[in-house]
Length: 263
Image (cartoon, rainbow, N blue to C red; front, side):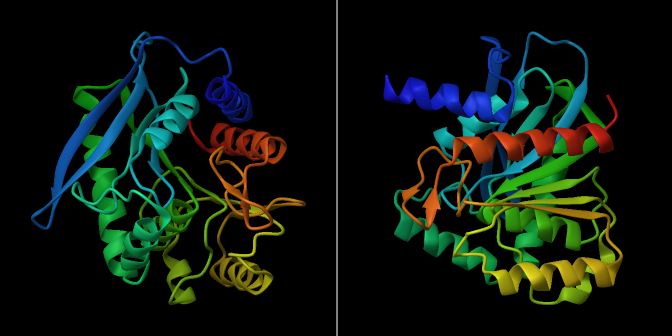
């Protein structure tokens, strides 16, 4: 009963409650980067035949999990095709927070590698148009926590997508000058009381965006900490699910995507 209630709350927060079809398809997609095996997941509603926009989704530090797949299904609904990117490698599937921290730190410590992997996942996603109703010219990227930072690095790499949305992601980057390469609108959805993304980092990010002349927005949600969209987050005062704030953030995401993506 508790798991069912959690799913309903998440569906409500994402804004597609009642729209998630029984015809949702979740298909593993294997690919290689520099000789290493990776496996993401393609998610879409198979009952809709028309092509639709795509969302490259980079999950939190736990990587490609059943929880990430559930969130992708809720986000996709009947509106999007979603691809869950694997930034760790097929054989790296963290089983606890210690393993997740180690995996995420390895990738975050090498931003060039992070950018290579997220861009490779985007190209793999585009190549799925022959098996999913994907509009390859109409793709944006979203990410959660670790994934939020990853999609910002996708933007800083100069990749031309329709937009990037970071949910409670880290905002720091080794070289703020890289923001001058950004060619896409940016939306950051941030918990105002997030201890893992302190105010100094938020201010530095804002200055980075201003200096680079980026089309950017930052929504700061009072009373929210890290992981506010994650029903499994349960670290009081540090990382907690907040269904009210999650609902506001997903609504902001949809408004942003409606503005920048063709329908």
